[in-house]
Amino acid sequence: MNEIFEKLGLYFQHSFVLNALIVGVLIALCSSLLGVTLVLKRFSFIGDGLSHVAFGALAIASVLHFSNKMMLVLPITVLCAILLLRTGQNTKIKGDAAIAMISVGALAFGYLIMNLFPTSSNISGDVCSTLFGSTSILTLSSFEVALCIILSIVVVILFLLFYHKIFAVTFDETFANATGTNANRYNLLIAVIIAVIIVLAMNLVGSLLISALVIFPALSAMRILKSFRSVTIFSAVFSVFCAFLGILISILAETPVGSTIVAIDVVAFAVCALIGSFGTAAK
Image (tube, rainbow, N blue to C red; front, side, top):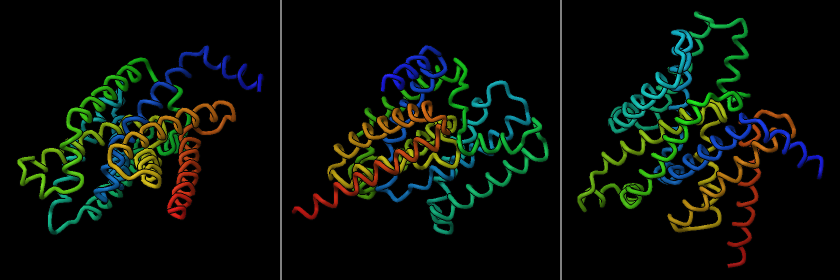
């Protein structure tokens, strides 16, 4: 045990490890806040769709040699989130079909662009790093860390300010509209916030594993608790704990950060499901 603490103490002397922990915890917190809303609205896979869009935008930014790729990836992902919301409301194209259409198209174009205009000799490594996170969380620049902190604070503030409106839109859009709440406006706000979270989370778990940060904490909380507020709070604590533990384990075991965090999420969900089943049986 002493060896483990000594090893962690050695790693914590490096700023890139502290940056990874700060960014990882903030991303996990932001992802969990709206995860409950997305699960209840049956729009969970929006994370997959937007993450693939972000992958395509990242490929374009790499080909164009952007010094800061997030400056291109973020607006494109936000724009597609708005487009996805509008398309999902179209009676000819349902929400799940719109997500699949944008998701597959963006992923295919992104991979095609990376192959047609390679920016390095190791295309497979670049693609793997982008899709699964790899070590990108440990190579964050000071600008990326600062931007993540600022955007995370904005996301948390927006969620707290519009908590009651988001609650109303989540459970009954018709009633929300009847009481004077513009449901479309708040759906748009939710879509934009999720797009921001997706872009931030790409460095942590990669574009293919982002949905896990959104879905697992919410589903785990729902196995044990019932009220929207308690589920949201538990989901946030659960997500932060899993992210923190996953990063520590990945450092000690030298495993991929993103995959380790998601594996912790899966195990923790199984534990919560077991606790929930015992609670139901006891009643």
